[in-house]
Each structure stands twice: as structure tokens, then as C-alpha cells.
Length: 74
Image 1: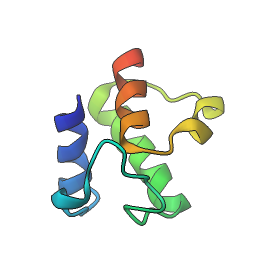
Image 2: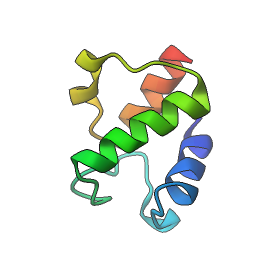
Image 3: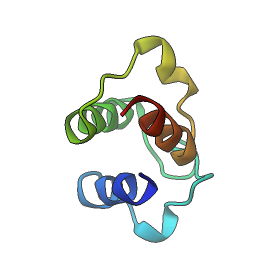
């Protein structure tokens, strides 16, 4: 799942693949703003056929958090 998410981040969000590490913070390390975070959620919902719960979104701080969420809910 990590590699699939990394592919989405590189191809859809134009993130440098060298910057994507499991512990990379979406905002502080990858430079996401709130709109880009929303875009990532929509992309993940489309690509992985899941629905993110609004209450869970504040807990998605790092790449690992997103991977763990996808694995738990896919």
C-alpha cells in the first residue's frame, strides 16, 4: 500500500519521490496545504475505493498514517 500511495503522491500531487518517507509529515515535510490535503483524500477515495470518515482526517499527519488508514479500511 505504501508504494501505491507513493505513486499517487508522485504522479497526481507532483511530490518529489525522494521526499516521500513513511514518517514524512504531509504539511511540514511535503508542504501540503489544506486544499492539497483535501485533494489527497479525494484521490485516495477514488484510487482505493474507500471513504474517509471526517472524524478520522485530523489523525492523518504522516505518510504512514495515510498508509495505515488505507490498509485498515480498503
